[in-house]
Picture 1 (cartoon, helix red, strand yellow):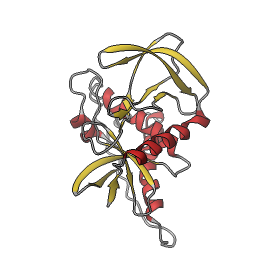
Picture 2 (cartoon, rainbow, N blue to C red):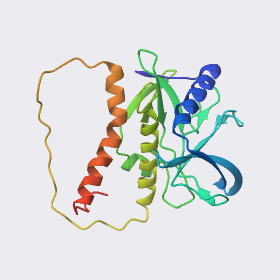
Picture 3 (cartoon, rainbow, N blue to C red):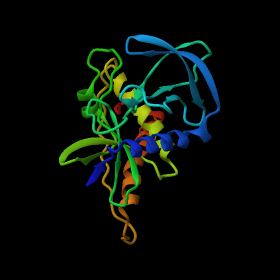
Picture 4 (tube, helix red, strand yellow):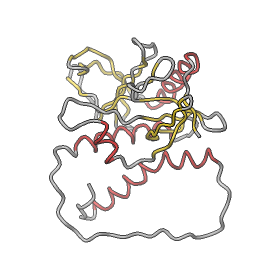
Length: 235
């Protein structure tokens, strides 16, 4: 089972590694007003055109956490922007009130997970909405003897890690938008049955977890193809 990282120094190192993963993808810094907890703060966010997201990543802990905020689309200088998703980590120990966490697999590789705590000030947006609609993978983690179900975000050793994180941000946006989305028109159900082809080979646990982190990205690409062809029944 995956184990929670609760040591203060290991969390600090993991947060710094988390930030460094995004550095090659940053195009520019933009000064904006970020809406947060009913307030607005002037901040400098990092924009990535390749990922389609802006980010505000904490090098230093604030209170009991590292604050990592994400939004979608390139903001204009001085604009008021809304946070779509936060992937915050406790600065030490286990804190289930904080959405994000670092866990390790049997080989010690770092994986980012999320408890599904999403907000945004709109009625109906919360953990239940996330749990009912998240299209990614869920895993069980060991929190010092307590088993908890969490959502996979990304495997930090994967070359696709930053894209896995950006996909998670877009998935949270999709889930939040369900609150105001009209009911889709009834259409003929499409059934797909996967058939095995080729030779069976051994896949390591590390490869399995990376593949699971990629699941959301693959599903959304299929969704995009369907909608581009005129099929609107897939929210």
